[in-house]
Image (cartoon, rainbow, N blue to C red; front, top):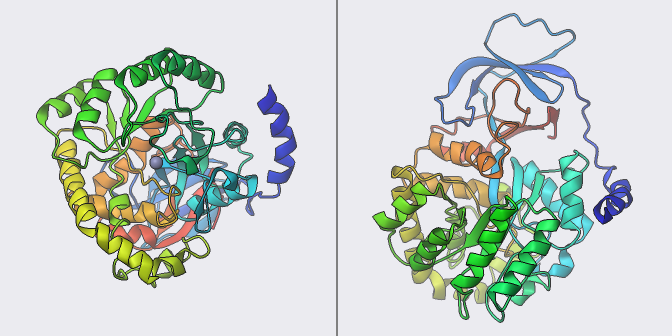
Length: 436
Ligand SMILES: [Zn+2]
């Protein structure tokens, strides 16, 4: 109820962000289509959009009588679904700072707009949100919040005096025993988060009896649980406890068959977040992308200058060996999970640190997934359909088929030949409306 009252107050501020184009019918003719389902690309097809929905996908040249439909030439273009980021942090980052105080309506709107401008149509904000998140969640669901669709885990669970850092704010729940964990999970469930987030890392670390209580209670409310992990043994215990999503790569050692078998049996998703390791050492010297406008414009004010300071470069070079090793192990584990048929979902942890830029991170993650040996067609499925399936919204979005939302981007190069083509965005459509 409280949510709804706040909602009506806040929407007046949000409504000014309406999209330029009204809903219409239009046809994008003669494109190559990657539908996100993992099916082979189809060339020379036309996409027919009616209002906010894909009405038909037809061989190019077919006559499709839609009264007054605008025709858009698409020769040489590739269309793919908007990305779904299964591990993001919205509203926390502002300039070079990470703080709960940054979580203002303007900042949340700005981040959601930036995600969408980079082709990310849906984000799951994992456990660093503030009370207003539930207002944004409502607003997003009824189409009143601009930018990427906003899903939230609300307040994540961490360890007292442990992970995550205090900078994430006072909303983080840090139960000291299983009973408190149960009570807090019960209260969180009344707010209807889309997911639950737990951190199991560092010292002191969340005890298994505490995450058992959280997971069991979350499941009693039909809410899935995603866990921050680093170590194989934590992942093993979490999977035994019923966790639904491993929200980072396992980075201390190669995963073994027993974990993979258990994850498969329990249908556990795996989110590699490879880019966070790369961003931990990439600025020891200036990387090849440093002057690329696609990168530069994704950074918050002040971050570009921060990255090239001697102090930052030294910090990164001190970490270089450890993070490179972690990336290697993570890449190998992704390959193993993938070949075993584990459900992989793209996620980046963007917005959790200034160096993890919103938008650029997602495209870099796609590149790192292919560098780990996953073919681009599969990487695109993991970054679209699989993310939507993890959120339970795959019947509406995350792939392109008649009856689904017209949520897609138009590229002027083919990402199956080189995944970096996802950066060559010519146009973005969400709910059938052109955003840019
Ligand atoms: Zn995170």
